[in-house]
Figure 1 (tube, rainbow, N blue to C red):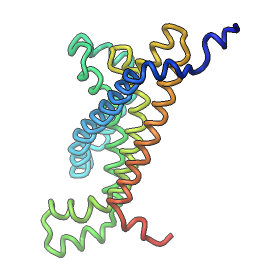
Figure 2 (figure 1 turned 90 degrees about the vertical axis):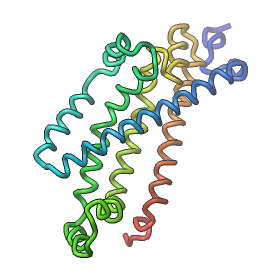
Figure 3 (figure 1 turned 180 degrees about the horizontal axis):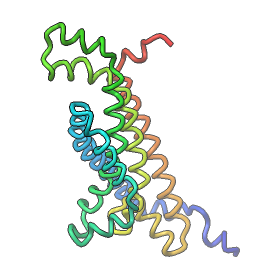
Figure 4 (figure 1 turned 90 degrees about the horizontal axis):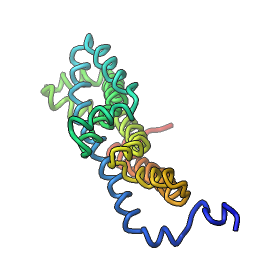
Length: 221
C-alpha cells in the first residue's frame, strides 16, 4: 500500500471514533473565541471613548494597541504561562490584546463618521450626553463597529489555533496532534473546522448587525 493510502488526507473512521474529542475541541474553540472578543470589546470601548473625548490621546491609544498587535503570539503565550499557568487566562489575555487595535479604530471611526449636524440636532433637542450617545451616535456608528467585531472574531479564530502549544487551542490541538504524529486526518479536521467556524461566526455577526441596523438595509444605493 502506498504512503498516501496508509495516511490519507482524511480517515472517516477516525472522525467517527473521535467525534466526542472533535466536538469538545470545537466547543472550546468557540468558547475561547467569544470570551476573547468579549474581553477585547469591554477594554476597547472605554479606550475609544477616551480617545473620542480627548482627541490628543488618540495617537497614544492606537500606538499602544498597535504595539500589542505586533507582538508574536507564540512569545506572548509563553511569557504568560509562568504567571497564570496553562490556563484560559494565558490564552484570553493575548487574544483579547490582538483585538484591541481593530476594535478601537473601528469604534472611533464609527463615531467620527456621525455627521456633526446630527449631533447638534440631538443637543438642540435637549438630550443628555449619555442619551445622545446611546440613542443617536451609537446606532449610526454601529455598522463600523460591527465590521470591527467581524474582523476581530475571524482573526481570533485563526490565532487561537496557536494556543495549542499551551494546551488551550481548541481545534489547534487537533492540528498540533496531527503535526506531531504526521497524521493528516486530525490536521485536516482541525483546519477545516477552524475555517468553517470563522465563516459561520462571520455570517452570524453580519446577520446580527443587519438586524440591529435595519435602516442601513433600507437606505437607497
